[in-house]
Amino acid sequence: MHSIRSIRSLAFALVMLAMSAAAQAQIAISINIAPPALPVYEQPVCPAPSYIWTPGYWAYGPDGYFWVPGTWVQAPTPGLLWTPGYWGWNNGVYVWNAGYWGPQVGFYGGVVYGYGYVGTGYQGGYWNNGQFFYNRTVNNVNTTNVTNVYNRTVINTTTVNNVSYNGGSGGTTARPTAQEQAAAREKHVPATATQVQHEQAAKADRNQLASVNHGQPAVAATPKPGAFSGSGVVKASRAGAPYTPPAQHATAQPPANNQVPRPENNRPENNTPRPAAPQGATPAARSEVPHPPAASQPETAPRMENQPRGQNMPHPETEPRPENTPHPENTPHPQAAPHPESAPHPQATPSPKIEPHPEQAHPEEPPHPEKEPERPQ
Image (cartoon, rainbow, N blue to C red; front, side):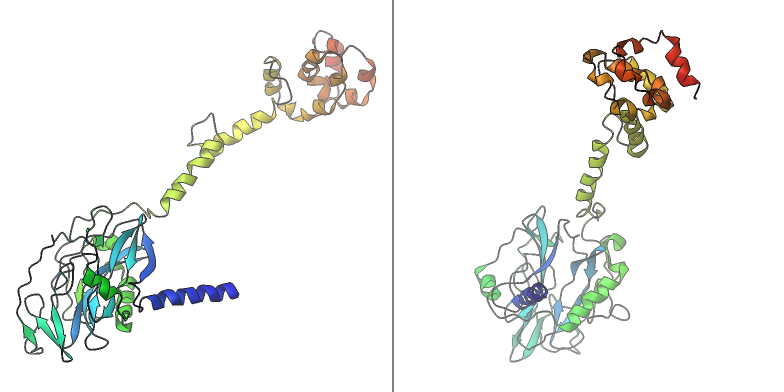
């Protein structure tokens, strides 16, 4: 119980870290597959004043990457701006850095999400006396519903290639500026409940999976969180880049692939690795038959292999009689004669112990011992 409480406390501390001024929270989601490129889509019309645009992003679930549509979200408190989350390369994996609300926009990996998010800062609007003013050059605003607007040209100095992650192969190379580092030390507010529900709705829709939509989701943006159908829902016009399906569950397959050949290489050493099961049993049975005789007598080995009754070969091993003879070189000869072994009579008779000439038993010339075991058979 104490360990469970400790784990829960640690998990709660990680959640609270998202709201602390220490740094952006790194959610415990990491993967060694880079997310797809950002899809190309139009921004839906702003539904009402004080709504802030939160760009879409690729999240990761049990079935792979899925697209969370960009949407207009009402700020939890006037004066707060949204810092988008981003995928960042860290120690060989891509780690998700969750977005947050704060008085300033912090670092979001240099990812050009568009509509005011040009890779650093936010050019889509600002707060003034509790009112949010929208830059019409980067926002789709209806002046009938929203009157606090202005026009300001945004010069984008970052190459727009729709890349969706920072670092790694092909990712952005941006690093936090001094202003973004200062923003990271400020008090943060995590995603609102509607934003969390919005992501969960996208996760439950299989059409949002990259493996299904190939980087071009049917619902790329919504006018409000959770509104995946109806008026204002925007479909992606195209994928940000040609979609390349990753290897099937690449994060789990390497250990599986490493385990598959190991049993195959361990058992059938002299056989091909494909028919490991059927061929592995055959040499195992043969290895049990020739192990009693010595390796120096290949002539006796084929005789025992040709006899299916040779499975009773453990009897000569139990007989110490030929082993006690002063001639160890001739000991394999009585082993090579399995005929008297199959007959229980010679084993019961103590005569072999008295006979000092077990060597004469190996030449198969005397017909009498051979005929005697055949009679009980």
